[in-house]
Amino acid sequence: MAIYAISIEGAESLNNLANDLIVCANSVVHSSDILDKKIAGLSDGLGLYAEEISGITSRNKATLLQNEDLILELANRINILAGEIKQMCFAGVGLRIAGSGSAVNSYQRAIEGGGLAVPFVSALSQGLIDMFPDNRRKAIHTSYANAPEKITNIINRYAASLTNICESGYGRDNLGRLVKNGCFYSPQGKYIAMNEQLNDAEYTDVFKHEVGHFADDIMGEVSNSPEFISAMDSVTSKFDSNTPDGRQRLNDMLDDAFSTGACFDRNVTDIISALLVNSPTVEQRFKSESKTGYVANYKHDTDYWHELDENGKPRNTRGSEIFANLFAIETDQYRISRNFVERWFPEVTGVFDSYIS
Ligand SMILES: [Zn+2]
Image (cartoon, rainbow, N blue to C red; front, side, top):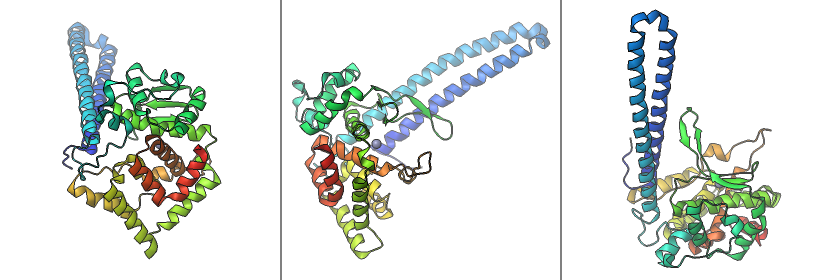
């Protein structure tokens, strides 16, 4: 069992604990319902004792329900604590490189600049802003205040096709346990589902990525175009670790990511994860860098990168995530991340630029 200090992993463990508590509470109440039914089925056989036993079980049930409420409240508080820990991680606590910070999102930077006294207004259309819950509108405006016009224009142009921005709700993991859904964009329903448990900094960060999936879809799934796919292939081949050149370039790229602080941008690490399909060299490097401090290697797992659609064809999850991450980077205009992806993956950023300008 790993020991965590202040880290995203630690906060995620807390989220898992909260989910486990919810599942336990649900299953205890469910078992008590089964017991009630069994006793009801036996009522003739119990004769004299029927009344007494049903009194005991109903008192038991009342206590269980009270405890269930307490456990759900506890789970809720644990999730809030986890959210606060994540906020500390993004505010730069525990980071390896002092001053570079992981606060790559413009909301975090805007509030660090002391700008919150005068709320920023972005160029996002009122129609889009109205789709957010009341308590998120200010944060969204602030985080898009400096977004380039080409990004806000694309979002505004297509906003009428976005059907909803809703809460992501709960689902089941592969063991059948109840888990909080992450944020996602649904191409079928044309809506964006957001996890309302996130703090504003994370919420706005993730939204910039999800709206990138929406833009990709509504512009005709451009991340699946022959140009985009061939740009990805040519980048990937340049980092082939089976060749001395490829190995060298890969190590240079990683050195650059860690020395500039580009490694702290989740959009950057996820692009590397997609292009190089979780190359062991990359994984190893993040692991060894993390020994001296916390560096989040935000990424998707390898199974996801290889996912097939219902016809057995690759789903191009790599292209789709790369597009959404580039869209978020372009929105934030964070110089370190933008320069990094242009320097190392120019084929991909070139095609991307042609779609958004
Ligand atoms: Zn995504």
